[in-house]
Amino acid sequence: MSAVVAAARAWIGTPYVHQCSVKGVGTDCLGLVRGVWRELCGPEPERMPAYTPDWGEAGGIELLLGGAGRLLWPAPDEQPGDVLIFRMRVGAVAKHMGILAETGAGPSFVHAYDRHGVVESPLSAPWRARIAGRFRFPPL
Image (cartoon, rainbow, N blue to C red; front, side):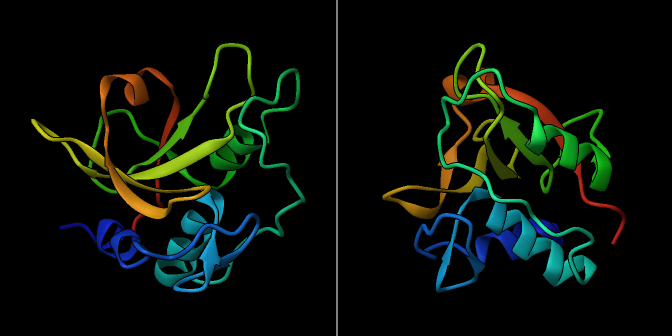
């Protein structure tokens, strides 16, 4: 298992709290990735701006994709540990993310969302269709 996947799975059960990033206390989807970054890469390289929890936000700036493009590496293929960014509906800003945990016959990803907290979910066809970007942590 990759170090990224192990770190992400250690957050499972953390409650959902918008704009938080504290394992076992509260996090949102970005907070999960931020927490894994801190554990594996060190201090966060940028301060996070305020953001809304609205997955259906339309016509805005692609802050999540832009930030991932600055701080993470493009992932040309699919590997456990990849950061997946999702666009929840056509025309909406990409506002959800998770970490790919398993590939192959039973793909899954670890993510945080409202009323569920951090969970590992199947990367089903509907989730796969929403992927707007795939990135990788810098070499550890």
